[in-house]
Length: 195
Image (cartoon, rainbow, N blue to C red; front, side):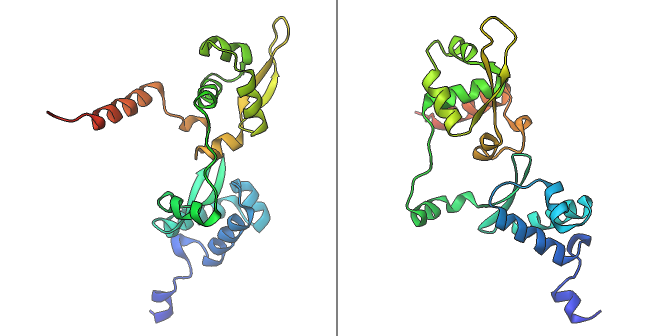
């Protein structure tokens, strides 16, 4: 066996290294999540080859400062969360935060979509008009049509931007209510002290 093969494997994970590098370059240039089919079309190769390349790239990036993540139905290179404070310091900004009201409305829309503003108001017990408008402006929710009932109210759904913001590949990645209860319960347990 030659020394070059030991030092520079040409087929990591059974995929040509150049394809892995090309996928990485496309994801870096895109900045936003890119679907596997779009990558395959840009590289003029089979989708299966891109899928294998993504597995190799994900493995290569694991534990580095830039990781490969499945987000919003596509793939994206993202900075590792452990470097968030340094990235924020460099960019001179603060992360965009959502108010408690915005998180409540997003939760209702995410778990019950499609919903009308009336549905949201009924669950929250307060008028949600301003919050819905703000979420529409931030492109976290979108108009999904009109409900077939008197007044034909608008229905809302979450967007790809919502999935991207929360690091979700799809809505199936949302925690179930039981999982959410377990998370809240473990946070409460972790906050208690023994006397």
